Length: 245
Length: 97
Image 1 (spheres, each protein chain N blue to C red):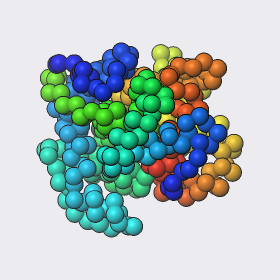
Image 2: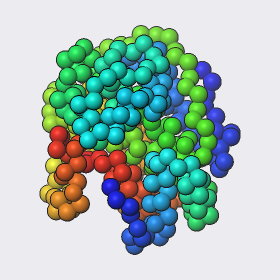
Image 3: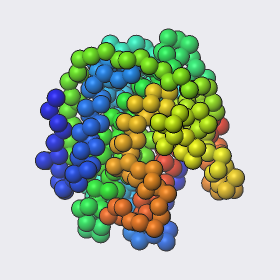
């Protein structure tokens, strides 16, 4: 697989960020825990296609989006439930509902596939948002890599306070205590039903924003902009997205 | 959410808010102008970091919303009044989480 390049970026991109983006694209193309490389690449393609989907546009404009019935415009052969998950989270994430998530799972999408799909879709959204924000074309999605998912569900995962099972702080094993254990925020354990997806997503977060240790350190300046400036951007984006978390 | 005005006590705050809004908006001229202004004020490295933050939160918000991640216990009480005053508790994702 050819590593993504930012040679055409209008401003220099720091090396650690480029490295993190190269790892993220590689993860998208490679077999995951529950999804093949082909399915993960298809997920990334469907994220981009969602912006052009007439059904998604109609729902976004509606005061009652769950009352708008129809068929998504798709560019892949992903199952209907997976397309629905990808399109809704890409275009109308503030109005996702627990009952909707349960319907997708009862409709045949496994909990693990749901979580891994969220991870891949959100990684794609993050990479594409970065390219758009900095003023360059979104990168070409890499070709899928061969191989089979290992389909290992962490034994310590169980249903907690989120919609999907996760590894609760008190259940994290010794190896995962720094990742999902006590003192770790809920958002960092959100994808922990698929631990490799959680680690991969937060590898990207750590290089674009701050890693877990840096987040707790308000005395050190880690970026070219101040911590207050960082949190101002973060807060404004989350307010526009109407994210309550 | 409504338009945010002013620096909010943060250097170049209004500029960064404008940039954040432009990134998730659909006006390419507005984004180009905001990129130029951030670069002039904070340098190319500042622009890259601002892009990284915007890219992170435009994605991580969707992780939270699609998994139904509850607000951490340690943050619930200290933010209760703020969330109520800002109308955050009425966000659809909050009602369902």
